[in-house]
Length: 261
Image (cartoon, rainbow, N blue to C red; front, side, top):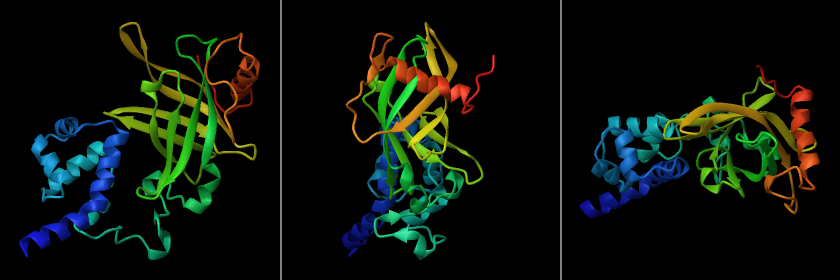
C-alpha cells in the first residue's frame, strides 16, 4: 500500500516536476547550480525532482530562482493539476490557453499571429558596420501558458537565448525576456504588424576586453516562411547588406526606437 501511495504521489506531481525541469533547461541550470542559487543541498533538489516531499520553503526558493509562480506550482505539487483559480473554459486539451497575469494575461487565440519563424537583424556590438542575422522561432507553450521564443542559427551559437513574450494590453510594444542565472536580457519591439514585422531595441551586456558593459542597438524581426536568405555575419560586401541595413535604419527613422546620446 505504501508503495502504491508513493507511486500515485509521484504521478500527481509530474506536472510540477516538468515545469521545474523545463525552467532549469531554459536557464541552463544544473541540479548543483539550482541548489546553490536556492540555498539548499543538492540532495534536496534531487528529492524534489524525484517527486519526494520537500518543505514549502524549498518550493518557494526554487520558484524564485526559476521565475515560476509559487501558488500554481505548489497546487500542482500537491496533486491539484491546474491552478484552482483558472476557470475551466480557459484551459484547453493541450494545457493552458491563458498566460499568467504578470505576463499580460493574453490568450492563445489573441496571439496566434505571433507564432512562426522570424529573420532577426541587429548590428554587431563590437562592429557597428557588421549586421548579425539569425532565426527566431516563436511557439505557444501549453505547459507554461505563454509565447516562447528560441534563437537559432546565430553565428555565436553558445549565446543563443530562449525566453518568454510579455504582452501588456495597454501598450503598442511587447517584451521578449530571457533570464539566465540572474542575468536578464530584454528586447522591446512593436506589436507584429500586417507585414509580419516587429521593430524596436535590444538591451543586454556585452564583453569589451576584460569588462562587461551594458549595450543597446536597434533590432528587427521579419516573419519568413523559408530561410534561403543569408544568415550569420553580414558584411557590407554581402548582397543582403543594403536591404538589412535599410530595415535597421528605418527602425530609428520611423520612430520604433530612439537612441539617446
